[in-house]
Length: 324
Image (cartoon, rainbow, N blue to C red; front, top):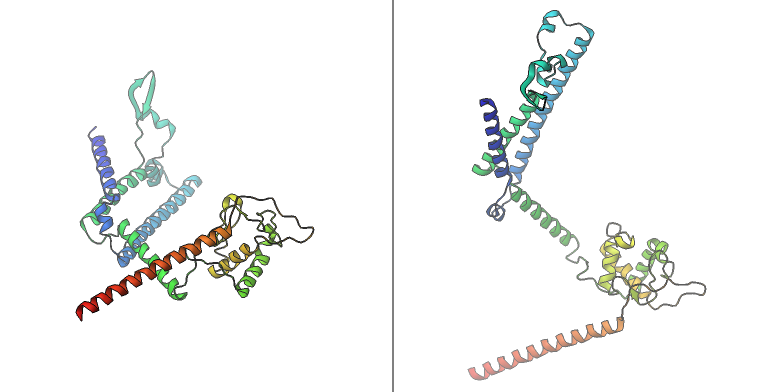
């Protein structure tokens, strides 16, 4: 009874320490800093421990295999037969005839239980997890050598920022995405877009953009919006619902911009005789009204900037007159 109470106490202490060790407070997350060398040291330590455990397991399995082979062949003497081998103790292997010695004399409805405690290998792992939790708790709570999850997150975010900075530097700061893409109108850009379209898109959208598996580009109906940003986003990210793949991994942003611009130029084109376009899908997009609204917004911004400049000039003139 006393032995069972001690086991239960160890289990509760281990559970408490494991939960306390695995949790990270908000203060820890906010105060997280980079600690790459500490992380590498911690990872190397864990891998080293795992390697030692694997070596012990492999050695134990080899010993067990050798003893079982000799035991089955009858090569072991009478002295060995009288004592219980190590591997039988480790895995708690015993004959069925020994069950009568482990019967608990407290039947329930005529059913007797056997007193079969967990085998030593299981208890070794169990107490090992408690020891690991204790070491983990002390290291990450009372020392500065631990590499917490918050610190790992902070380092990964910093690495992402560094990669982004390298990308911006390599592209001269001109990275094209959904927020800054513009409609290309030059003949060279549209020719590039046409070549990309014919090489990759005609199987689904037809040679003239009349549609097929994909929608028709020659009408003014669009499933995901007809603005250059909308078209660019669909070409870049794809549309799983429409079974369209993402092309972001197959071509650079400049090529995505070129083909998206070319697709928009197909709107309103007349199909050759004998070519029938797919029925309209999506919602109509009034390109002229959108362009007019954009121009009005630009004019208003320019007027506001001019008025601000005029007001600033008047203020400067008044200040100069006052000084004179």
